[in-house]
Amino acid sequence: MVVGQSLEKKMQYRIKRSKDTVFMLSDFVDLSDKDQVGRALRKLQKKNLIIKIGQGLYARAKISTVTNKPIPEKDLKTLATEALKKMKVKIIPSSEDNIKYNKKETTQVPTGRLITVKGRVSRKIGFNGNYIKYACVS
Image 1: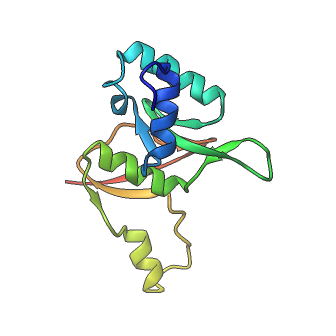
Image 2: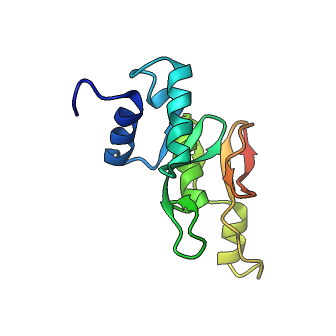
């Protein structure tokens, strides 16, 4: 990476090289102040490199072969799990729905949009009208 690169190019390089799929505004504050980082993230969003999945949450994007529009690289539950881990929210592995389905107590197939967390989460994580729901356990 060249020293004289713009903030947008530095962030683009970091996003492409990272093993993470979800990025937060705080992942880039070492490069510049929050306002400039926010502007650069919006520019990267217009270039279809990232997609906004929540307040201050972005996911690396790819172009859909069906709609020719940007979509996240991974499924919504994986993105939400990664985002919650970055926010230091404790995730409880198995939900009640999955256990009931696996025991054949119900024929209702789990949607994969329910994540059991310890404590309370108020952040909406989603894309294209589909959002994650939380089952809170204290």
